[in-house]
Image 1 (tube, helix red, strand yellow):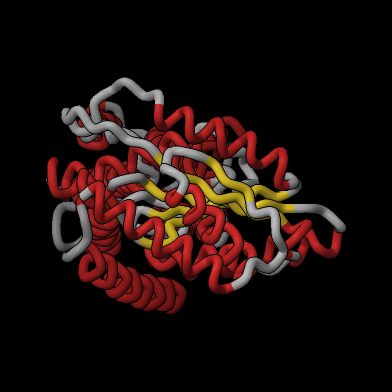
Image 2 (cartoon, rainbow, N blue to C red):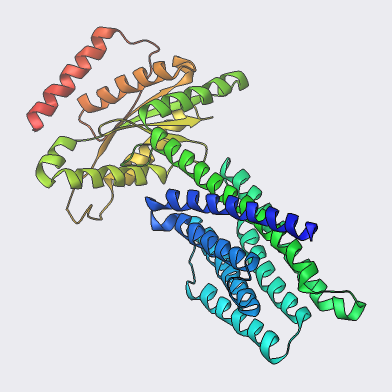
Length: 410
């Protein structure tokens, strides 16, 4: 009697803890998007908690009805949690599956209670169903993922895997118990299963919160490092990542080249077609540039319609050929941009580490001077920086000449 009381007290405490975790998930899901999985996890944990309460307080309803409804709610809860895992990963969610499976579990347990009473069959059916659902979630989570989300995936997936194996062991007990003459009465197996499910539920809820936390961190990092319109690195992030890459290349004795790209007559495009078309032009330009980039190249938005590309391992001569291919890819496109007949061309300036060294700021300044020379000489062309340190007055003269041409065009 004392053991039963201690088990009941522990189970009650665990139910309260799982209820608190469920409330945390509900609060987190309240203002989240429906595609994040949090609402599924909140509803699933709520169904699991209700099932646990029914299983503990079997005096609230008839004993058999409490067991049947508790098992149905647990199956529904784990099924909805599986849907939440798939929603979190952006996969399809067969909504009717968990509901139909829960109804089937209720019918099966009703049969083995009222038509053919069998404790072993009930243990086998519930163990197989609940364990299978846990393993389904574990299969979705124990996969390769980006750090730090991978740690949260594997933590939650490991708990789901252990829970699934434990429930399958419960099913095996119910299946092999009569054959091995083992007592499989509910009074012996049920408390152990109950405590295991509740401990697993606490771990799963914590894992879901951890997954959401890491996903939020990754989203904030993406926003802080990338340009919202084009998806390229923003100016600060491009500077930091490019300089780190240049430092490594300097230690390895490898060259690098920076290309600065500017869309010609972009103000005219905005004035003639509107800023929405101007935004579409920038996105189109980035798409064309990426067609000629390697996986280890860096692309960033320097400001307005200007972009910079860092090409590790390439000298200025080879990079000039890449720049020319980019220019032709942009200049020769025949498709309308945002359903508008926009004629787009670009000017490009190229600067390499052979003259400027492995300093990002120096490369940008040299490529910027070459870009202005391309603008001054008529636009829609590639110019390569050939002097290590052009006089400041020459740079100013190029800027003034470029601005004069621009004013004439406008």
